[in-house]
Amino acid sequence: MLSLLKPSFPHRRNADGSHDSICTMCLATVATVKSEGELARHESAHVCEPFNLYRVSHGLLSMRREAQ
Image 1: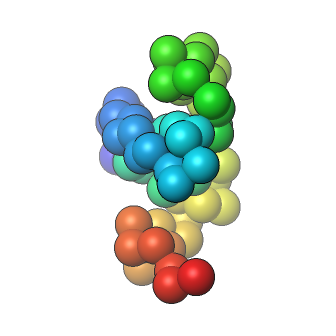
Image 2: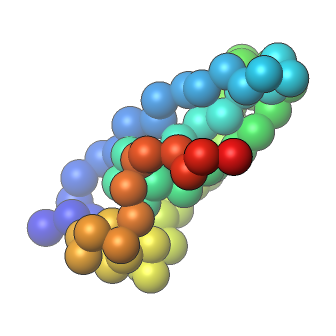
């Protein structure tokens, strides 16, 4: 069951020096902060949105970044 799994949160450094945390379950950007050390607080408070979980489970969202 998807809701019993614990997500991980890979971090991404952006061109402006900020850091993103991405939930591996719902693929949401959990937070964007200036200091990577701030991400843990946001990650521990994150709750996946059921609609995003549905979209991921049906292949409607992917980890691939859209071309900008």
